Amino acid sequence: MAEDLLVDPVRLRDEVRDKYRAVALDPHRIYHFHTGRPLAAGLGYDARLVDALPDVAVESFAGVGNPFSLRRLEPGERVVDVGSGAGFDSFIAAAQVGATGRVVGVDMTAEMLTKSRATAAALSYDHVEFRAGFAEALPVEDGWADVVISNGVINLCADKRGVFAEIHRVLEPGGRLQFADIANGRPVPHEALRDIDLWTG
Amino acid sequence: MLEDSGFGDVEIGDACDTFGGATGEEKARAFDVYGYAFCARRA
Image (cartoon, rainbow over all chains, first blue to last red; front, side):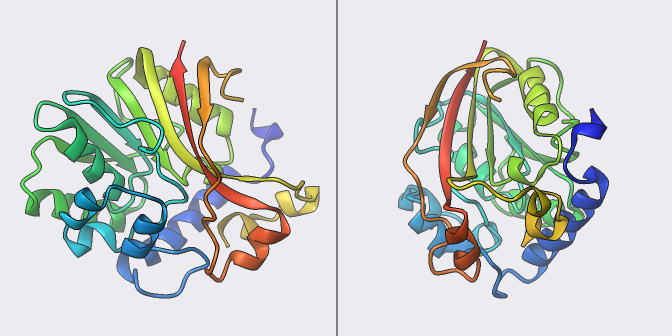
């Protein structure tokens, strides 16, 4: 499968990790994308839920859409957030599923995990946890999740089919994948698709 | 790709101007890049 990939997945992971380490540690810097509360408002997130979160839970949010816009989560649902970053979408999910639900965020960037875990502890969210891992190898048992969410992450993975296969594995039959991501309406030249710098910037 | 991966009932939301007003806007416009919400059910 690796020979079919456009870029080296390990090098791409390193580049993505560097970029999002900066977003965790220095969220108010200018990036090529929007971040934080203005972004959440622009993407139509429920203002009541966003306003209830502390700044540290929102400032490093760097999603590209709203995975809750087509369907709200139900109380009691078990959710996996692929590429949970500093935890913004996981905390929105936690509010929607309530104390009888469960949310597992998975991220590969240590600085994001440190931030999301600290925020979960500060909020006393016992039903949210954050695990280290890759989208292509989720640290979640087979069929555990009712819903998988993700936001702006799958486009940054070299092996998208591998990611979807892994999401399929952790979802129960009939479970839902709710994600947001970017798509291009015009073709990107083949040489650009192989330029790893263009994937992250 | 979603359907090839064992998902059905695929819904796609309206386009979001994800990069509008950000420094990445020019590059996004060049390739007509927008954000979308997707919902699909595991078969």
